[in-house]
Image (cartoon, rainbow, N blue to C red; front, side):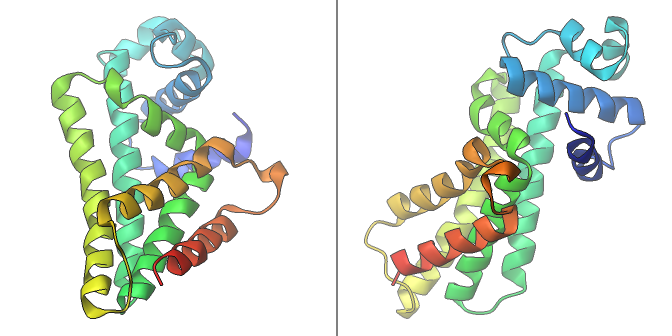
Length: 203
């Protein structure tokens, strides 16, 4: 990963201690995105982290534990950012736009993490799968409840709430697939564009 990307994720995972644990998570994220969870090995992860294979097990019991930690941090982070953005607004339209802006911006900014959290959920064992699924469902409820509130007040129009929420989330999640700085734009402008598109869809 480039130095700027390393710094970005270091800030996101600043609470993970010690520093060697953070370094392993970043290496695991890189390996999972590059090779997929099943193909990535702990030896590959330790090499990317500049550590010995045995060092992995000092910090994490398994490759699955690293994936779970990556997914938990990712899902909690995007949920917290979306909530904070919505809390700063008043009306359903404003709060919906705030959610979309934050959600899409996050997925473009943390594109590698967004790809892994989107595609590797099924690799988790049942208990850990359920924990991450609950976080994902909390994010879905956050925007669904706001759109429902807007529809009830007449401020927003929606014929199929579930389908609309799915489309909104897909728009944001897909930013992680295609976004790259060299393609032009920045995460914030993508978030604002998506918010504008969603509000047009709901009016």
